[in-house]
Image (cartoon, rainbow, N blue to C red):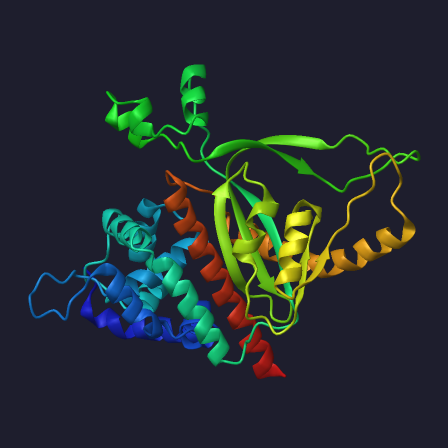
Length: 360
């Protein structure tokens, strides 16, 4: 137990953290976390407290804990420890020194409840409304892309692999082993990640590409060109085609009609859909089969790539800073993980814009 005489020293320590630019103080001042309370209360099924049974931890504090967890890619057990260990985290979350803090089970159950009720998606929309109120309206067109996110590899027999491909659930595949079934992810898939830039021989044929087997999921996003916020998102297994998700991530409220994407999104169906929606396709064109790409097409693709690079910066930020990796089981929980990663990215992006605006 801390000596009461040391509390003044603790207060001074926290003040010094603030003076040196504690990033959590900046985040708390920039994002209106109270704005999410109504959605959290509704999704969690909390009443007004008159009937008792209210949980011991404030829902906004718990939600802020999920944001911290996403920022640092922590397990629930590690998150429990870090909340107790970091004074700056306790201050950000609103927990008093020596008072109870959430354990790993509480954190997991809170996140699962938000996942099951679809509340995380609602909070993502609520934050987008908050951005628009601050003047960050989707502008300049939108850029679409997808990225693989690894998950723990599954070790199954050939018969079990076949059952997974047939779409059977874990309970159906392991009916007599409930504990084993609970640890099996039947939604994630193996795919080949093709890396590097496509290069061609003088005769126009492509050089071999490096293919790396990857097991997991795929995160699909669209960002607005002007501010770089994630405006649309979806999560699928790793094998799902990028082009099939275009309609789910393209948003109707951007002030410009342009849509940028790589060749994976080019198809007659997508081009027709964009045209019907009065949207302008800036999707890369493919090289003709057996022929070299024309200089005009190559230049056009190059200009599109310069714009598209902005969405790749989003994935780089998430992977380098958040260390994206799916620890949970199943598509629904993977979607929750990636929704939190997208929400956290947008909060980081808002801090960037607000700081830049303040300094001119």
